[in-house]
Each structure stands twice: as structure tokens, then as C-alpha cells.
Length: 341
Image 1: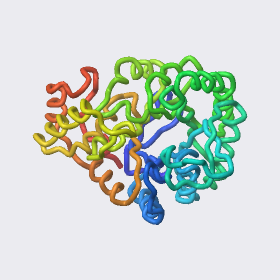
Image 2: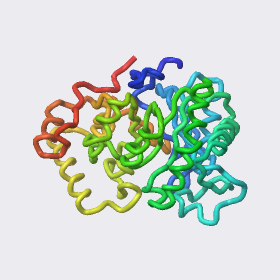
Image 3: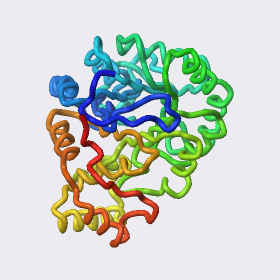
Image 4: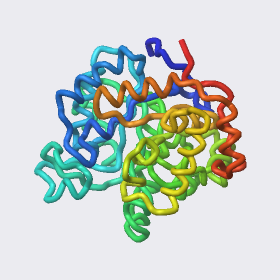
């Protein structure tokens, strides 16, 4: 991988190095609202010059729209790329794509399948949509009760156990990909996955953030023991920590809004941008190798670069702990983790 402006960290098992800041590709697919495609493409083109080298996408993001855009941006470059498996895209527009979160997708319908053949087909389909000859990381996308409910998830998890994991392991063992993991929004399924096989990392969205640290109770110690690294997606909790009105893709509950207000009070007292604190906080944990906020346009890119550059006084982190706003076991940043090359 050509030089990033950001430091890199090795996975706990040493299989791969990742820049500490990566690009989250969900907004490129028009998550929750349609994109201005020209603005999105311009932003994506600018990320390389700003030092990005690690990009994450998925077939589900705009039903192929995000993969197509990222492939066009990375072709001919020395990148690190992750995409996802677990959904196949079939011909024909879904009856209600906006109901799935994508109001302006490409004309396909996603279908869940975590079996051996589907994982292999998904990998090949992604290469073709991307127009690339290499994918570095495959994540099993949205396995778990959060997406499927208990009964359906039991079926999907059985498919993963009976064949899907074997497909991923074969691709990794053959050198077709470098690493495998889960890409999910919930803690429980990550813990269950340890019984399935050897995972290099989990892309965990929204569950280890400045707002939520329950992953410290059991999951992160288990990850350290298993040498399974964490990539943090959704560091702003669906926008709740950057002035948005959603948390976990829904309206912000009263108790969560109260905690956000208290976080803002501390940030104001220390002249700190809460957004910068949210971006920097997760990297203090030794299991976390990268943070990948989703970006929609150039203004969001510029905001992210500003927040990554901000120096946050140690007094702010200690104040959060004193106010009971951080888990007692949460490591706090000693320096700016994005200071790099």
C-alpha cells in the first residue's frame, strides 16, 4: 500500500496493516437520502489526495452503487479494500428500496444468503461491480438478530457455520483475500462467532463509541484473547454525536439525548469539538485498528480532516470519566491518534 498520511496499525494477529482512518462507503450508496452523485464522486476523488488508503463498501450500499463508485476511484492505485458478503443482488428493482434505507439505488433486489456457494458468488460479483482484480477483506454483513430476528437468524447462522465460513477461510488460505470478519451493528453475534472459526477482525458499527462502551464488558477482552481486531464503524452513532437527529438509525431516545447533552457540556467547558472527540476516542483501545466514518460529500470530508487534526487536552478525557460519561475500563487517548506521516 502506498503511503497514507495516517499512521497504520497491525491487526492483533499480524496478518494485515490498516491506516487508523478509513473511508466508510455507505453514504455513497445514498443511505437514507439520495445523493448528489456528482458531489459524491468529487468527494471520493479528493480522499486519495487527503491521505486515505483504506476503503470499505458493500453490495447492499445502494444495491451496487457504492461498489461501482469506489472501484472507479481506486482502479490503478495501491489501496486496501473491504467489501461484504451475505447478500446477493438479483436483477430487478426491489418493491420498496427506501424502506431498506436506499431511496435511489441501482435496479437490483438484495437477497440474504450466507451459504458456501453464495459467499463465493458474492466475492466474484463484487470484483466485477468494482472493476478491480483484488479485494483485501471480506466481512459477513448484517448477520445477527438485530437484522433478522431470532428465528431467521438461526437459519442464517447455521448456513454460515455449515458452509459460509468454509468459503471465507478457503479464500483467505488461497491468498485471494487477506482477512475475514463480520460487519455488524451488534455485540452478541460477534461473541457467538468465536465458536465458528478464526476471525481476523470485526467491523463493529456504533457499539464502541464515545456514547456507547458496552463492548468493554465482554467482547473487547475476548477479542484481545482471540487476537481479533476491531474496526469501528459509525463513530458518531448515526449522526447523534455530530448534531444529527438519529441514533442507531432511529429517533434519539430521551436517555441517549440526555447523555449527549452532558457530553456537549464537557466539550464546551474544555473548548473541544465533540465530533473530534468521537472520532479520536475509539483508537485508544488496543483492539481497535481503524475508524471508518461514512462520508457523503466534500464538506463531510473537510469536517473529518479537521476533527482528525484537532488536539484534545487530556483534562477533557479525565473530566468525562469524573462525570461518569465513560466506562470505567475505557482507555483514553494520550495523544492525537491521527498524527502521522
